[in-house]
Amino acid sequence: MNLALFDFDGTITTRELMPDFVRMATTRRRRVLGRVVLAPIYVGYKAGVVSGNAIRERLADFAFRGLPQHDMYAAGERFARETVPAVLRPEAMERLRWHREQGDTIVVVSGSFDLYLSHWCARHGLELLCSSLEARDGVMTGRFDGAQCVGAEKARRVRERYDLSRYGVVYAYGDTHEDRDLLALAHRRWYRGKEIA
Image (cartoon, rainbow, N blue to C red; front, top):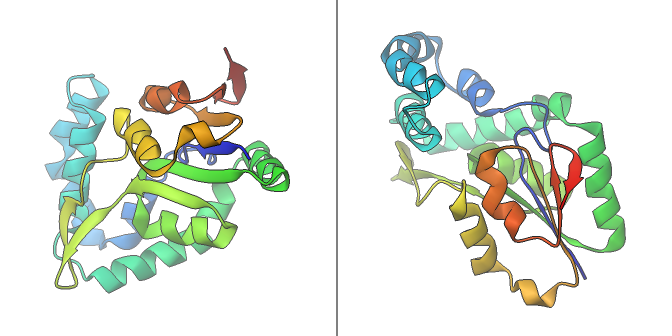
């Protein structure tokens, strides 16, 4: 049996979906205010002086803090059902089908939120390692529950959950520098749709 590791945003989908989910799951007032409050950190991110982790932390805090956990999971289910299908890459879905036909273990390894990825992966019969948001007493805290599943954390989580020596071939698929550690785990690697050495 083989193991296939797929990044989600930009690899299975045509673009990053976190902003789309924030727009769908939060109020208009919060979104408008967020554009003002988060503008400096966004500019810093675009200039390369603010990390992706930092901007995601601020975005999650501003967008979700204080919201009911149940509402956010319901929004995630709706997002997975209504929004995600329109942005799936046909070639990635074909590759997922190919791995399923081979009997491979298929894992989505993503920095995106469990709020919607858990629903999408369950619907497609895929295993999942991803970023989770914390909730206490049914209310979102706005913080990540543990480390964000990006960069070296992707590889760490894969090694923690799967004994790579048990698989004949490990495949990995990614599209950004945050996937490099994930790709390094594999015998066969695809970056932005092309196999690399």
